[in-house]
Image (cartoon, rainbow, N blue to C red; front, side, top):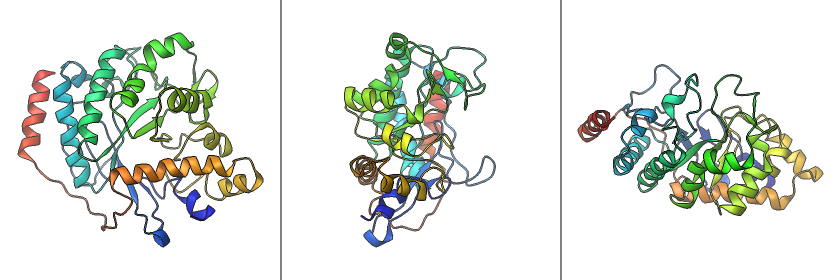
Amino acid sequence: MTLEEKVSILSGEDFWSVPAVERLGIGKLRVTDGPNGARGGGSLIGGVKSASFPVGIAIGATWNVPLVEEIGAALADEVKSKGAHMLLAPTVNIHRSVTNGRNFECYSEDPFLSAELAVGYIKGLQGQGIGATIKHFVGNESEIERTTMSSEIDERSLREIYLIPFEWAVKKAGTWGVMSSYNRLNGTFTSEHNWLLTTVLRSEWGYDGIVMSDWFGSHSTAETVNAGLDLEMPGPARDRGQKLIDAVNSGEVSAETLDKRVTAMLRLMERVGSLDDHRPHHEQANDRPEHRALIRRAGAEA
């Protein structure tokens, strides 16, 4: 791959996809939200209709890991019907305040319950060939000033509470994707936090998937690449593209580091089948009776 081709797959092409490399026959990687459904490429309103599964806090109330694995497998079908390869889920941030506007999306205040459910969800999803993206890594327990605030958390609390669901997702479920959070962790944006993304995630836990930014959650070029952020989302590139080419040419980012980021992306593309997927993008709203029954059963257990 040329330098330009390598750099091209380290940032999005648009809101929901990573560009193809046509010269090499590498297909386009497509992602979709979210934890309780696959909405496809539509905006917050409109678009192709989708099945809506119970939200995370409702699933947490079931304490039923096999049920969550069923939901993960069903969501894989929903993702495929939207022409995508990867689901931006599950969300495993910890309930720490009743005023957090996204508590509904997360499972619990208990890190071990959250971890068990996340493992089931990811196994169900990835067992059907769709990549999971566990989020938001880490310390995103407040929506107030979430893009600028710093979560001040000592290492013991991090390891005993906040990191547990992510650690289990890596070690027990083999998640293929991790999404960094918007916030800073102890003063450093998580998208450029070397200790978090490299020391803990990769060196200690043995993670070999990708780390993507939350949408518009990247704030630098060399710092994010060197820290371990593989993919800047969404596109078109803001901190990558020509800026990253220049950083490699100037030595701010080594060729070896760049190749690590590219290898992780290619490995993901191979896992989810997008590497050689050249089908025209097509989204469908499939009404599946078995999914309706599962949604009712899950809602009743909640």
